Amino acid sequence: MLKQTIWLGSGSGSHIHHNHYHHFRNPCKLPPTPTSSAAVAMSISPQNKQSNISINTPTLAETYPTPLSPPLPAISKAIELNRATIASSNSDLFSLSKTHTIYEDEWLLAVNKPQGIYCDSVLSSLQSQKTAPPELHLANRLDRDTSGVMLITKSHKVASNLVKAFTDHKVKKTYIALCTGVKPNWETITVRSGHGRSKFGAWRVYAFSDAGRGLPGGSSVREMETSFEVLTVNGKGSFTEVCESEFEGRSVVVVEEKAVKIDGGDDGNEIVVRAYPRSGRTHQIRLHCQYLGISIIGDVKYEGVYEWNGRVHDGHHLHAETLSFDHPVTGVHVMVRAPLPQWVNQALSNSSTNIDTVHVKS
Image (spheres, rainbow, N blue to C red):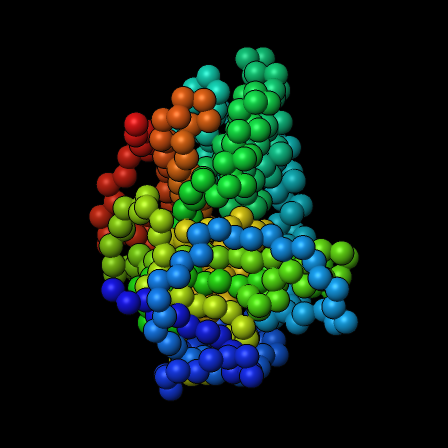
C-alpha cells in the first residue's frame, strides 16, 4: 500500500504536488488562543521510513524558532497547582503492594502506577520495604497523572543495560488515550515534529525542520515522532491487539506550520486512540494529540476538556499500556502489560477486550 506524506506548511519551503487539503481542529473548550491558518498539502511519497530519532547539536540562530502549538491556557495554572497539591499528599501516603505488581523476576519489577501518584514516591515506597533490593532504579518515568507500566531494575548493571536499550530505541511502548474532538478522517497516522521548551518554559510543538535550532536556556529543538491508531469513536470500533512489529501510520504528517482550526465541526466525539511513540520526549503524546485536534480528556495543559459527560476530571486520561523489550539478562523477549483503568473499560464497553496481563515470548 502506498503511504501518504502530509507536509504541514504553505511557505516557500513546502512542496505541493496535489491540490488536496487536510485540516486538523483543536476542540478546546477553554478560552481560545491565537492560531494562524496554514495550507496542508498531501503527496504520495516512497516509504522512506525514518527508524531512528536523531538528537542534533544546537546551532547558533539570530532568532529562536517559533512554537507551533498554543501557549498553556490561563485556566490550567490553578488547576495544575491544585492537582499537584493533592498528588503530593496522596504520594506521601502511597504504599506499593503486591496488587500493583504485574511482572517480577530476580532482575526486574514492573508495577502498575496509579493516576495522580509521582514516580519517585513509587520507588521510595518500594525502597522502604524490608525485603527490597539495595540497588533500585527507575527504568522509565511517567507523568504524575499518567497511569500504567513502570519498570524498576534491581541492580546497577541491569539499569545500565536498559538505559542503553531505551536510548537505542529497542524498547517499544504503547499508550492508550481517551480524547475528545472532531472524528478523525484517518484510521492510522504518524506525526513527526520538533519538540522543545518555549521562552516561558512550557513544552511546545515546533516545526520538524527546526530540529537542532537553539532555544532559550541553552536547550535545542529535538525531533519527536508518534504513530496513532483509532480504536473506538463514541464506543464504536474494536480493541485491537498491540502491533509488536514496527508500527507506522498509513499517512505521515510532517509538521511545518500550525494546525488549522475548523469552526462549526462536531467536536463532541469521544475517541480512544493507541499511541506508539518512537521517541521519548516529555509530554510527547499529549502534545501530538493536541496538534491533531483530539486533546486528551482532563489534560488542561494541552487544551483537554476539564469537564466531560457531567463530571470534572481530576487528571488526564493517558495510560501506559505496554512495554516490550529483550530481557537485559536472559535475552528473552518480554511484553509487560498493565491492566486497563476503569475509564478505558467504560469507553470500550461496546468492544471485545480479551487481554492477558503479561506475554513472555522466546
